[in-house]
Length: 421
Image 1 (tube, helix red, strand yellow):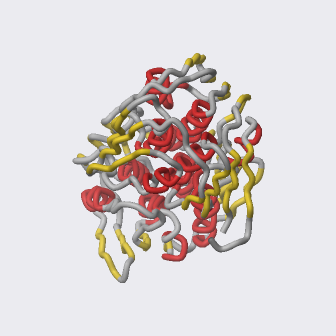
Image 2 (cartoon, rainbow, N blue to C red):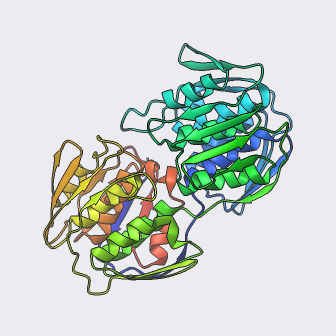
């Protein structure tokens, strides 16, 4: 397994273009199942999760070409409506094929999802919504077996705003008979990107970007080209990397609206930020980090996917702060590893209490999941001496060659391959 070797305390400066959003791509790709023929998705990131989804779609019979961040998916010859365990175990987002398969074929057999090292995240919201739309669902030998003669519109209310359940239900509903109303729908930008894609394909959707989506089912959809939105979590991660090293960065081709809550907190922590409609400039020259509390929330609140990175940032603040995760109570596996680098952090239920340290010091640390891994890289960039981040395959799931982008900004970071750690 690969590892990163980081020699810290290099000031990061420069310009970057943010990659396409992982979570948007993992919804757009299975949505292509809904329209027989060739769909083109632009700005698709080259990530392990994307390659996993490609393998899954190819297993079903899709013909796929991928290069220069453009993916072509021909779903005209899908002959297998099964998502086997060997693919789904690697990535929870594989369950996104459930809605499109039911919409187009009326049947699906999908392995129960895996793919993450923390936290139970049940898919009962997905299944309950599909049942309301007339789907018969059985759980057999670790698989969801779903069948329906014809999906029918339904009035659906989610007790918890769920990105995954909203996306799956939305994809199922566009070919259903009648009207579907999704109440307390997720309003994350990735869901809006998916809805706009479906709309471009011929779906009738009202309320995009709001908590109530109204979908009038249509008889069929057609393939189209679509741009994937920039990855707001990659953008936030890079901003914190620069802030931790007293640097200066211009992020290009990204709307500040995608991460407004993160920008507000960065300003509160002492960073100077300028924005235009498609650019973010962060200046952390001579920054003395002001302790700034964060509570994660659904969009447009502070993202849970930025919680670990913010914890690393506050580890060098001039005083005490806390980070509270209201989305996933057990998402703190990065904390013991940050402590190995000299951070002073204690956990009380779903709250990390951080007493800012004067310095962090390089050490060997172990990645446990995607965003935890990012926090360790950020801490290593700011630490004195050499940090080794082991098992960085977690990072490759969600960041496109992050070490190369950091090197462009002046980081001293290399990937060492091929050993078992």
